[in-house]
Amino acid sequence: MGIWGRMLNSPCLTDRPEADRSPSRFSANRMERSQTFGWITMKLRFWGVRGSTPTPGREYLKYGGNTSCLELRANGNMILLDCGSGLRELGKAWVREFHGKPLKAFIFLTHYHWDHIQGIPFFEPLYNPENQFHFHCFSTGGATVRDALEGQMTNPYFPVDMNQMKAHRSFRRLGEESIEFHGVRVTAKHLFHPQGCLGYRVETNSEVIVYATDNEAGDRAGDRNLRELAQGADVLIYDAQYTPEEYDSHRKGWGHSTWRHGAQIAAECGVKELILFHHDPDHNDSFLDQVLPEAQAAFPSTRMSAEGMEIEVSAAGTERIRYTTVNK
Ligand SMILES: [Zn+2]
Ligand SMILES: [Zn+2]
Image 1 (cartoon, rainbow, N blue to C red):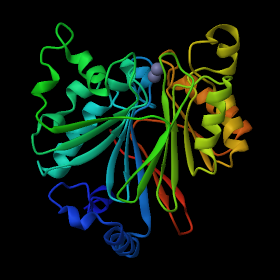
Image 2 (tube, rainbow, N blue to C red):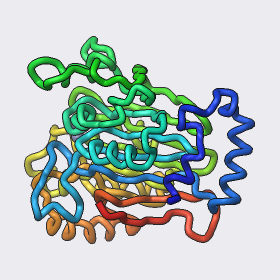
Image 3 (cartoon, protein in one colour):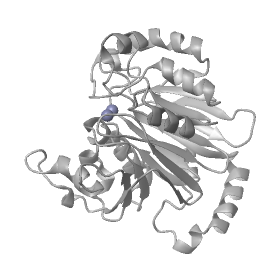
């Protein structure tokens, strides 16, 4: 059984009785797991790192062409951060891993732009009535979270509507707040982006991962919120869609940032690792390869996000943050 499977000895499998999910039980589980599996309590995998629209093609194979989708397993919880086109492959992987065993996952969407929700209709586990999915996002334009998500599957945009998805689904409207479940705290704050966007700080007792994409620097409230989210994070995943030159010449007001702003925030907030995310559709592999050293000159612990990249954050041990890449 791989690390993913071991971490799923957890409250996410829905056949586990509710009584097993109490904080005291969680502490016991955590201790048990830490002794057995070397303190791995957070593991993140990138299933989609592209911004705006998918980019199939040979020149995008290294970093990947799927839009925003991250899988996070934290203290045994299954968490999804955004549901771009990368969600489809993730769904197939879960079907293979769990062989139809009931699943429960918490889904946090940053916003409703296509590149963050377009994987939902193709997410196979949503069609299994045994599964549970808890969606979280802000409400927009008077629509509920449910309405906003179901809208992309209404006639004539998709052949079946969301009622065909038989999994149990709940929808929670988020403001700027923190919620906790099974030893994980998720804090949401608004970022600066057309039609709105939430950034998320996900933390356990000892690890912090921050997901802040689709944010344009320069807004007072947005910048303050970003700093609050990023403070002392182990890993900051940040919107670096444009180079500083592109931004300055013709991309102001488009709702995205640069590696330079990410590096500045990371340094100011004591972030350990900066991950550049939401790659522009016009930035192919060789372009991103050229950009990375420039970013590392400003903040050395910087990496480009790539499909298949995994990050483990451990509470103890000689290597607190460890990267691996799995075959797609
Ligand atoms: Zn986006
Ligand atoms: Zn957006």
